[in-house]
Image (cartoon, rainbow, N blue to C red; front, top):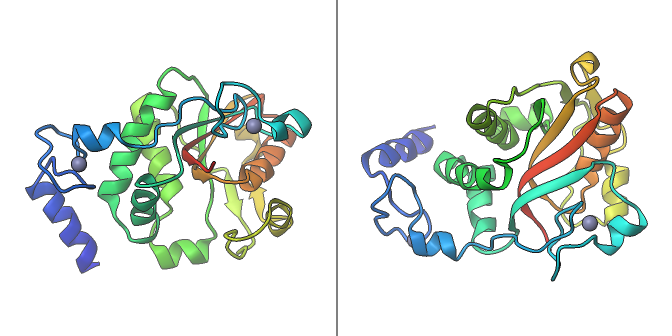
Length: 229
Ligand SMILES: [Zn+2]
Ligand SMILES: [Zn+2]
């Protein structure tokens, strides 16, 4: 608690300090121009799942077994130093990192249109322990900036063990029955965006997309900060 208010205070006192190299940025952004340019911006990628590729095309997985969502948009390739900023935001309560990533990522979504944003839900027990859900913070920021409503129609009903280190198949199994849609009528006939921080195997997004599809969502996109190579 003390730690997070100290962080907020220092953020207010010294605006425009680069969160990566600590240099003064001389602009109302917490990243300097050099560090911003050096971020692992996602350029050529799979047109469906945003997997980094050498040309804009469809990846082998999407050709063979397309995901349940229509399209994933990501801003960066998951790697240094974005991975560090994401973990500061996700696990250490660093709101400044989250706000910066969220703001920069908007460049990837600004020409898109959608009816609603749905943050990937966290189990209430984990959220209680962490104090916040990073995908809800991102959805709130993007929703405000792009004027798209944020729905809290999904609930995580099973506290699934962490997905880290599991194979794609094991991840999918791990998520069986993990989510439920509490307000199905809110997604019927709508173009929905699932908001996540990182897309790895896509198992979570796939599970959610299947539920949303069954409830009558017409288009399902995933917007995330970073995509693992
Ligand atoms: Zn810098
Ligand atoms: Zn793909």
